Image 1 (cartoon, rainbow, N blue to C red):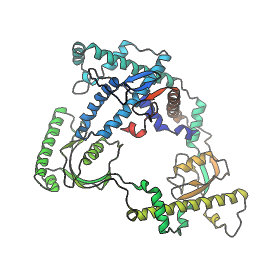
Image 2 (image 1 turned 90 degrees about the vertical axis):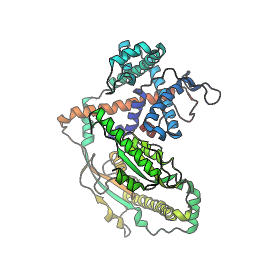
Image 3 (image 1 turned 180 degrees about the vertical axis):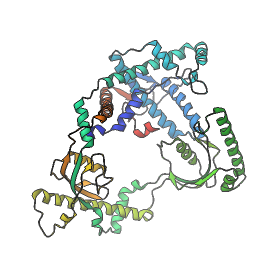
Image 4 (image 1 turned 45 degrees about the horizontal axis):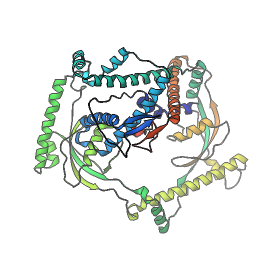
Length: 500
């Protein structure tokens, strides 16, 4: 049960965060016409159309927020990712809203008003709600703006209440918590036999085999665009460094001026390192790196996208601002995307062929030994592998397997084994492994001091799991037409896209 509960945990968290808690405000007064093909909508959810105007109004609002963060580093790829994510969230939000209506969930005007007050336009420089700005907004903002805010806020609150309702329906019993404690704290003793691929080191590869393997799989060796750059950088002080916002902003402004002076001297042909030394700026150089689409670090997102705007060696960016840094980046070398020739990657291809063959031999050897272990016919002159069977001391369910550390997949197999049962061959990072459960100790006494924490932990796991299953079922039964991304299913979003 423990392994089942842990499975897909991260996916569930993202579903909850982006499906239940996504608050979407439609920007007032923005209009966009057109679409793909002849249709005037981007998606249809159970007959409900999301028009081009609605979608692109929202998109413009969010793209402006991206532009404030990324500046010139914002490119078509980022914009496309944003479009996908927004449409996914809109579809999910519509599904949740309809389900909330079916459940008869209500929200009050006071609840709606409290959320609308959280809008950034009603906050002061410290990020706190400003009653004066709110009162002014009541006077100058059109009724259409307020209606749009109230409508979307109502949908969001209904979705949140639906989430709470689903969570409240999930319960865990004391017995389940005690069982959960036992599973987390049980210990095992196993015997295992590792058949390392390195024991089949005499594998040889002919030139013809190399060529054939390369021709079949050469697309897998394609290398993306790569750049190698050197750069100047200066970190912006944060609130934790300088609490006073006025002083902090003055310092950041002065750092910006310093970067401008450094850029002027670079434009005159001055050396990057000497300029860095003169202005006390950090100077560094990267190895070759690829442009990665999904990166959690916002600073590196901005840095890498700016670096890939450079084409010719010696070319320099303007001043690049990320959330926490200023950068000036100079291209050392750029290598365009290409499939390397066999001569260039011969060693890597040969190693891959050898590894595949060694794995095949190791698996076959493990299967042969397993048959003998199951039949008991192991007393022979060729059974030298018997001496390689190792027995571990007892280890906890939460700990590493002695002698097999880092092999997390083996834990799942051990959980499912019966006493004295040998497993089928399991692939590891070094070859193939056979496992036998010698003993399992399950605590008979439960530590009562941990029950409260474990109860909450198990409850959260069950709630996430229930939410995932519930939403997956809603998505499955919905009629979705995704005009922009026909290949993207309702509510679907990759983990990487969500992390953006």
